[in-house]
Image (cartoon, rainbow, N blue to C red):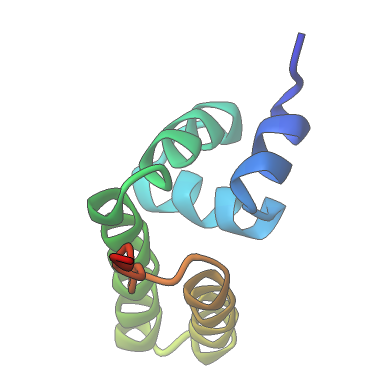
Length: 93
């Protein structure tokens, strides 16, 4: 049986990613892990996760919580690097 850690490693998600998603939706981290692992399987899901992180950056900046905003921003940058949205088209021979 796979553990949540196995799933996160397979999907290239960090504990920080999961904590951010859990905070965005106000749900337990185990539920956030399941949601995130499903979402990163598609371009649309990856876009949604990126938007969740950007929403939290904006909300933290709006509250004046610059430390938290920077934490969310750094996580978002790392997430975008590890989950690029540009897919290469198959080349015809």
